[in-house]
Length: 319
Image (cartoon, rainbow, N blue to C red; front, side, top):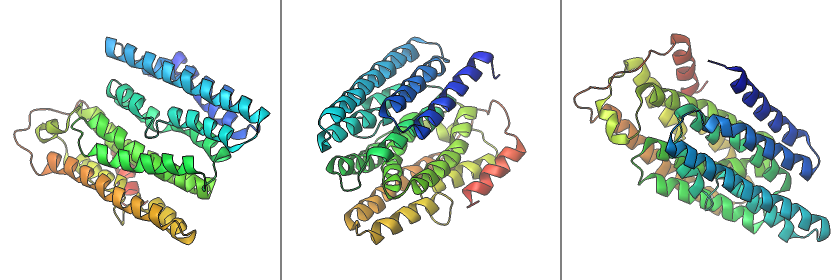
């Protein structure tokens, strides 16, 4: 299934990440962002229909606008070297990241994607903007605080109203962006730890939802799913919600400890409250699948490999 064209896209995305991470220059980092955007477009179009084409155009136009803002901020930085120029750059990067309140394009695009491209959009595609925000951000910056608080609140509260599984996963990702940014503000290692654990734990629900072809929460009670896969979905969602003692709780605990150490008490409180909302809609998803199940009519397309199941289950239980 790994065609030469797909392999080229994967290599291009990987190269763009290393380019942004290793570059000391804003211009070279910007080139990496553009390479990443162009490489991801064919992956977006892998599911050929009218909705996907419209979403691809929206993705391209949004990313182009954000790139213009970033390079514009870079030009202002060369001339003025003030906080305004940094704010303009962060504004463009926040759009690229899909952080609230600049997230509307992300939800629209996510709804039309297949599950694997969606997983890529919510994980790998966030790395370049995150690295650049880390290189520019100051934890005391008002605009940085605005992005973090908005992402935490919008992601958790809007997720409560979703019935689409793709939209729910997307709003959850927006909420996690607030955690990514906070972790990276303390140290790059903390942010990357959170990002890595989030990506690994998210993989199991994405693969299960892909195999069962579920697009809405009300379809979950109708699914015929193996007990082992039920356990995988159950524990992975609890881990994504940050419930102890699962693996997803570890990076949240580290970031909360750092927030308290540096006296960011309001931020820590908002993080705890929004995590409760996020955990609630994950629990609602599980109740729909396991407790309110009725007549089961939808069958899995293919069984999961036993090794992958056991590996993901072990990770969800805390590594």
